[in-house]
Figure 1 (tube, rainbow, N blue to C red):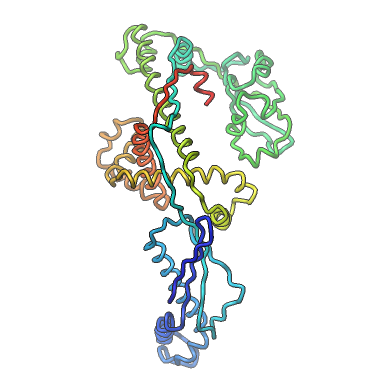
Figure 2 (cartoon, helix red, strand yellow):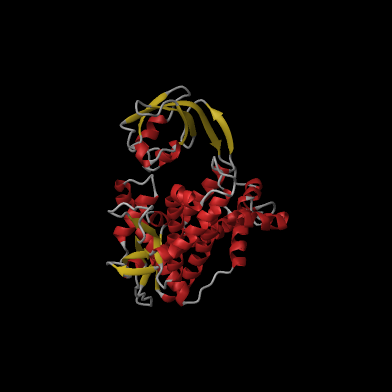
Amino acid sequence: MEINFDKIENSEALIKISLKDVDYQPQVTEKIKDFSKKANIKGFRPGKVPFGMIEKMYGPQITAEEINKIIGDSLNNYLKESDLQFLGEPVPIDSEVPIDWASQKDFEFSFNVGYAPDFDLKIDKKLKIEHQKIKIDEGVMKETLANLQQQFGEVTNTEIVKSGDTLYGVLSTKDKIEDKEVTFEFKEFQKSVSKKLIGFKVGDSIDLHHKKSFNDERYFPHIIKLTEEEMKSVKGKFKFTIKGISHTVPASVNQELFDKTFGKDNVKTEEAFNAKIKETISKNYAAEAVKLFHHKIREKIIDVTKIKLPNNFLKNWLLRTNENISPEVLEKEYDHYQKELKWSLVRNKIAKDQGIKIENDEILGEAKIMLAQQFGGMAALEQLGDQMDAMAENYLKAENGDNYMKVFNEIQNRKVFSFLANEVTAKEKMVSLDDFRKN
């Protein structure tokens, strides 16, 4: 058997595997012998079917199976033992000449492969990244307090729409949305729409536009759970008939609100309550600012690092392995895909160069924390004890190991960003919450 690796261009190559009869014939002969001992053919006693008859009847099929197995194993071993980091999976190249499994002796199989190119990664203080810090001003405090009062307020059913209400009703259009039950938050409507809605009653209807009637164009598709492709069929206006109105009476700023927000008796005065709110939102927004800072680091590094991906190979591979992806969708999404791939290559290179390692215990611990948060908080770790270990292990094994890699990548990302944050120059900038939200 002979395996040749021929580079094409831009991190693409052809792997050619050539076989002669000595490479596969012994296995084929052994298989035919074994089959003849087990075959049940009319006119012959079990185990007494002539080798030649089995070879004539099943030889081509057995030959094809054995050669495919040899090719598959040889290709996988070659990829594993190579110093290159291969991307995607090998794409077989169809031969122009049909294979004659009955009489052909020599075989050649070719596979198109793509691999990660060598690239230089330069990270130092010359990389200047903006790190926004959010001002916790009076406006932010008022907004947060209002949200808390709304969150812990008393919900009542009402007959007339007021500002801040929640509207339940039915959508109907001529374009594939018939009698669909939905719930809209009043605050999500454009001002021009919300002004009209004030005073509407249960049973009233209003014509709305799926894009122009809401503050965020993504709100409507999210509420009715339609894909981007399905949204294309929704044209013009749709009719929304109100079936129910929920009104929340904001909670009073008193000890009951203090306890519901921060736990019983942890805060006892309005002054302490406001201080605790400021402390909490400062931590929360600081974490959001760090996420944005890390995102900007990532985008900058991807932008300045020259990585020539085998784009033609990757597009071909993605189309072959994803039935639901059309060429049009691929062209639209490919830029995002290649950015993710480039970042993965950069992240792995940094981890390797800096000796960043992730142990299995770390992955298990991270999975336990994720599951504990789903069960109401870190107290669940102590309450569930050993059960949490078993649950975390089962979670990591699920989805064919995808969950394991998801947690692994999360930890690796965190460690890589921790390294990068100390290597680049952070340009701190104080911004308002409104400006921060525009990012």
